[in-house]
Length: 106
Image (cartoon, rainbow, N blue to C red; front, side):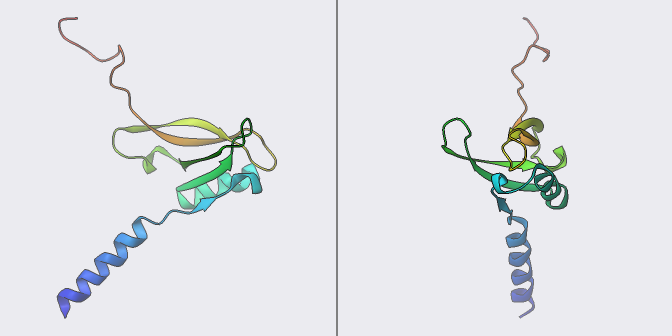
């Protein structure tokens, strides 16, 4: 019985760890989007491209602490109700192919 309770507790914790809110920023103000990021740390924003109308989505974060190891944040822009270019951060993988990396023999 004790093992079953521990397993259930771990399963509930794992389920909560993967939950992430989804929002349509085009129905929100830029301030609302920033507040959601500040409160939740990471959210998925789904919106239609202003140029083509194609549905787009991405995972946006409040700080780099919400990125995986080997990632950093870059500023992106999403359309909101009051700002067609609301700044948000998105995790991007580090590029280790750049010339700043030491490569012996080159």
